[in-house]
Length: 323
Ligand SMILES: [Zn+2]
Ligand SMILES: [Zn+2]
Image 1 (cartoon, rainbow, N blue to C red):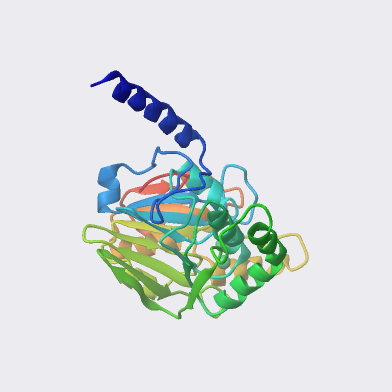
Image 2: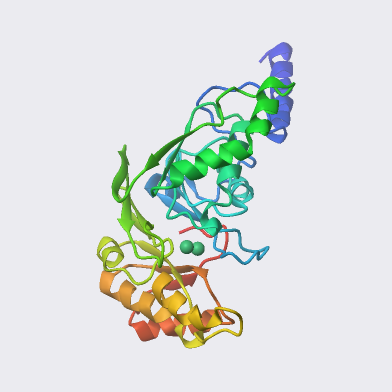
């Protein structure tokens, strides 16, 4: 190797290090994915099989340790986002996921704790370099939600595109598709299916089923016990289910607090109900997430699941867990 080539290689090494630090680069290939860290939460082997990352295991409670509801499923180079709760982009960055756009965003329903991070997903990915519309799939009402979000940030978009930032015009756009159930994505080894579930007063709420050649993953979204979900979850490798401890249910001392048990029964699924569902579906692994705790411990929840009849492995999700 000549001195000149070595010098060039060293310069390239230094430049590479700089590039790794300076995430916000102005020039890059159209299809490259920009990441905040190159350390991916999923190993290459996990990504090849299909890898689920818990980005937000929280509820509406602004617990600093638990971001709002959000999960990423990674298959090869594709990253699918399910729900977009508060904090989603920070967690995605932490997990080594692309910060300039996902393959698609799939919403379970439009409760704020599942959608507060949607403007973050759409606008931040654009500022980080996204140029093409981001597919957003959700229930009826998703188009209106996204339209209102862009209306709310209209001046931001104008300043970023027409001002000195020279943002890519139109790069913030979303390609919204409203669905009422069924297969919404089926391409190159990944099939994503919306399962209609009952969630109290919501007309439309989904669980999401993700199938790859080697794995089946179910995300319950928010739901009361659902036969359709139990059916769809048959032999799933992983079922992530929301829950609350049945033993802690009581009327609350606040206006409307007498309705709390009825709210829980019609909007959500207790630990015992989730245990019964997981047993019936024969899932290989149950992950509890999005837990309305009411003071209940992990041990109480696990006992509830066992009372429900499920004997398989159970985990309580933490942010950035991988399944
Ligand atoms: Zn929720
Ligand atoms: Zn909800």
